[in-house]
Length: 336
Ligand code: GA4
Image (tube, rainbow, N blue to C red):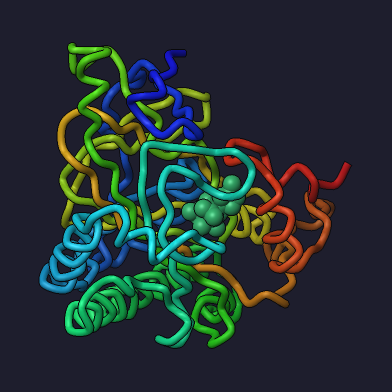
């Protein structure tokens, strides 16, 4: 491990570097939402990888690009201006610090509640009134569109697993009370890293450290910049080739529990530092705070028992916010 000199980055943020391990993975399952076998492909992908890519998703490139343009404008503001939208509590603008327990990364971000009313959102008070309104509209329009993808995928999961009623999962996401959030991330290139490590292949900074997502499903879209890695079931880290026109979807901890461990909440991380800026936008679809999270009865076969103690999303979330990114959060809720 190499630690950058204090001059290179803020003193409080000691960001780890790592060798850019991991082959480029060409086995990401592709789910074509227009194909009749989509439900089967989704289920197989969630069991094997906890991860897949969605094409023919119906979200227009215009909506995606509008938000990306607004995000680029926001992250291009002077630091003092962006700081006015922070610190994240947990919503708002954050820089390098992730969560409250000492995690840092080569990242700046905006974390937003995806169901809050406009007034609650600390979007970018520093933007002029007009720009702020553009940004807000771009976020709202994108989140509305990506939610439809989430609902569709949740229904495909129910179909593929033959769960009745088929809206049992999508309903959790559709609910007005759904505790879902939305994240815009910017991983800037790091010129100091170039000096420390001139060969582009020799070192990377940790942009977002390894973790699983606590929610049900997460929908990620990024610009055409590499850096996103997933951990396969055998523990190998592999790089996911970027694809700016598709969505990458991963299973979260709650869905692992709801399927009694049949689906896999996969660890992922982002390596940053060299080359281009990476911009990503992620919708985290979560249940309502009072939703009980326990294996769906039809997924617990006769003679089998639930692998997890029942908990509410609010309990899980509270406990998750006390952990470090890389911690195994489900451990506390597993039955002995
Ligand atoms: C990981 C997934 C989402 O980005 C997030 C993250 C949250 C945060 O950034 O505030 C957490 C992290 C995430 C899991 C453990 C806790 C909480 C940072 C952290 C150390 C918004 C989420 O819901 O959980």
